[in-house]
Every structure is written in C-alpha cells, then in structure tokens.
Image (tube, rainbow, N blue to C red; front, side, top):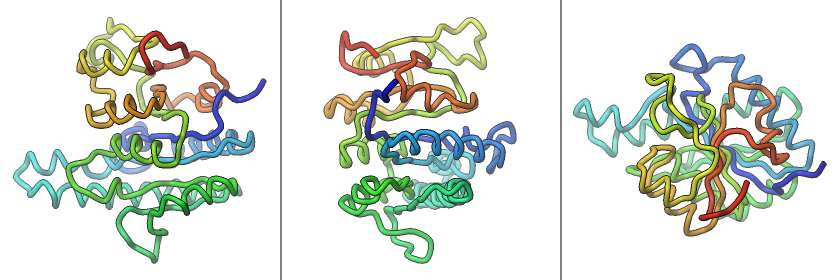
Length: 242
C-alpha cells in the first residue's frame, strides 16, 4: 500500500511534548515521536516538523500578566528552539539525518531558515525541524506551520496533539463532546473551533493545504495518517474527502 502524501509538515504542540508531566519535556513522548517519524522517513516521505513551545512558555500568557507582548512572544520562540533541539537529538539517536532551521539566527545551534536550503534538505531525505516560529511576534506556531507548508509546497499539515481530533466542545471538560470526522476550512472559521488560529486556517484555505488533526500519544498514528487511514479529523475544501 503506497503513501497518500509525498511531502508533509508535522505540527507538534508543546503540550503534547510535555506528556503527562504537563510542563517541560517527557522523554518517553520524544522517543515515541522520533520512532514514528523514522517510520515515515524510511517510507520515503519528505518530512518537515514545526514545534510549538507551550510546554515551556506561552507568549500570550506572558502578555496577559503584564509583560510586553513582543518580548513575551520572542521568549516563546526561544522555547521552540529548545524543543527542536530535543527532537533533533531523539531523531539522530535513531540514525535519522536531521537539520534544525531557525527563523531567528543562532548559528551555534541551528542553521538560519532559507527556503531553498530547507527544500534541498528534504530532497536529500533529511528531516527538517523549523524553530523560532516565523521570527516575528504576534504570529503563532500554527501560522508558522501553514506558512512553511506553503513555502515548501507540502501537501498536508499533520497536527499532532494530545486530543484525538476536533470536538464541538472541550473533551476534557465535557465527556459528551462530539468529535468531527471531516470539516471544511470555512466550518473551522465559522464555528470558532480553535484547532488553529484564523490566520493559519485562512492561509491553509488559500493554498489548499489539507489538515489532519490527530492524537500523537497513540504510537503508530503518524504512519496511519500517511497511509490514508481515517483517524482524527480531516479539514479541507468543501465536499472534499479524506
């Protein structure tokens, strides 16, 4: 059975990386994610990853406590670099060639983000980890995922989270919450479902980049999504099918 996609962007939430700890990095989760990514790389899938930083610092939370928003957001970008380096270490310990490309220049730990360089790394079979968001405050890592996916011409964004898809309400607070199997971009925007911010959703819609939201906590889910299995929630054009 062949893969449904050739080039993908995986968006890893910081919260997912924290696992049951709730803060920081849980090594068990890192190891599981690295194992799953290695599986699809060995299938020939060109793989890029965008990491969040919410397990360490959230810029919005900082600004709500009175911190300058731009300063708080830059701190959040640095948190994503920590996560990117941790994921790189987990991948390389499994023999997966990996490059971290940072939107904020820090040559001692990462390459600067250059679109053509990123594409070349992907073509050579390396996993590319995008760190430091877009390099600009006021933009989320969801927007980063949408922007980078458009730039490298990825076919899909795999949104790896702690939850199993998009629900009509918070499944943690409401056990009766209903999970959506499929939605259009307009549905996500109109219903205010919060799977990603409106800027990121609109960017995906304008560039026809598919979204699949699924749980990263169940091992093997990345490969299942790549192979076209119907897990999680699919977001695409009106009347499109996963």
